[in-house]
Amino acid sequence: MDRLLTVGQVAEVLGTGVRFPRRLIEERRITFVKVGRHVRIPESAVSAFVAEHTVQPVTVRSAVLRRVA
Image (cartoon, rainbow, N blue to C red; front, side, top):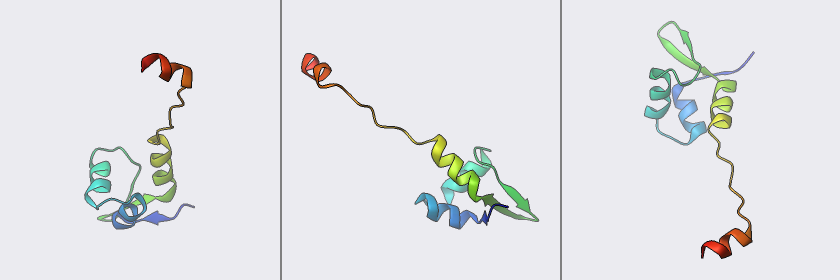
């Protein structure tokens, strides 16, 4: 079973303030679990969110750069 993280812990992992994970929860952009009135986010959901929003670098060939410049 996944470890369940608090909103504060998720913010720390993402390097943001607590408002960002709270907004993700409110907009239903990340999976979360309600434990009574508490909200917890599975560690795998944080990893999936990061992987889904990771942008890979673009490789540009030097010949293309010479033509443009």
